[in-house]
Length: 610
Image (cartoon, rainbow, N blue to C red):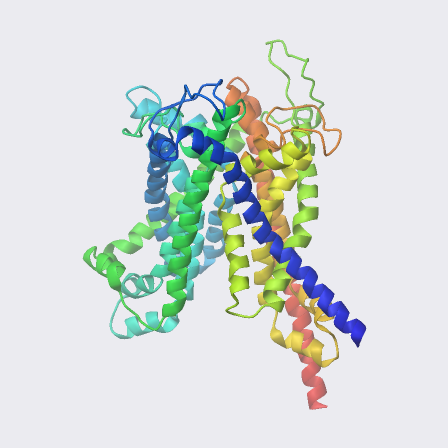
């Protein structure tokens, strides 16, 4: 008995330690970044840094002594806000009406396919969006509208970022709309409302907290976006006073200059990352307030409020359904255009040598260009996936087990852990890159390496794995746990023999989605793994480029557009396969679990009858 209790206590302690890692990770990120930025704030002046509108660094400026350069980021703060608001206007409006369409107007025959298409938008790497914007949208806007012939500016950034945040808005808004009790809709219909009137004047207002929360998360995604913005904004340090005036955001500033920055310049860029962190904290606070207020109200009060009044004035019963159809078709068409264009342009440039040939930095073609291949990038990506999953999957699953199986509702400590998980999920990828550079890269001799990149991306994967696994554990019926306890099994044995096997579908889906996240990300690897296409890596301490970073490199150089199209095509195919695998595994294991559960219930009923 004592051995069993000791085993139970040790297991609970182990799960607790893994959960505390999330708290440690958040504290470490903040401490390291703030510690690196304090000398820069002291040298430049905090308010001069935030509200100064001139950015002209001097390479000779140090963290002590006279300062000859200018280090004001106010124009970039305004640029980040302008791009985010534009994205919210595009992605928020289209996302909201698309969510209403899928939830309330979409025919059942196409509902599943339509939802899958929107979810696929979320899986496309940001660097692919940026490449599409650079190769297609900028020339199109430049020829049609821009007086200077360049399509770079707020409009292009708003369109691309709006498309990128659309899946977030759709997913959360749809979840909120689906959660509205059927009695609300049925009551409105019983009072004589049409289907459209019941949806827009009753269901939508009842789901407004979730809709607002989805918009807040969309803002967080837009504020932190890096690679797509770098590729289409133009990146001149200007106020975004015109639709087609080149401007720069906070995230773009870090990417563009960190590679060669030293001294005070480097400290100012790290301080830029701290400003981004403050933005994310504010957004998380707003999200927490909105969702917390939603839980407190709990649906006791049904009121149309501002949304209901707005739709009433708009005659929503006449226009709402049409707008939903138009927005939904536009969202689906956007995906088809992005994917179709990249695949059509890239598939013809994919060959055996490009995929698996050895890259030689000294070998050039007849036109004098380097003969690039992506074999080393494929291997680098696979090595990062392997190492990051080896670390993040056990930590994520153990943390989810602790949160779902061992904690009590209302615990302040649990709220702290969940808050840290939310912060980790909201931190911009370029801030992770900064943290990885000043910690892991520094620890490994100031050399970029696959190990440094893997450790950095591990921190980004933890929230995804924890949340998905916890949701899967919640879906396991309590009767299975109670049955195991009734047969004499302890807590740990029940978790590993009953609960985890029953939640396998969600866990495997989480792992596949984590793999997709590694393939999609580029910013975290720029200054940790490497940004230059290299020969085949010799080990985890070697540098290299992942597929997404290779695409950014090819597109940035301009003269390797064929290679860029081919790499983008490979990325999209890989993401499609991973998304398909996640859905397939989830459905197969769910059916198997459902079948096994039904068999158990049938045998139980037979025994009771006997």
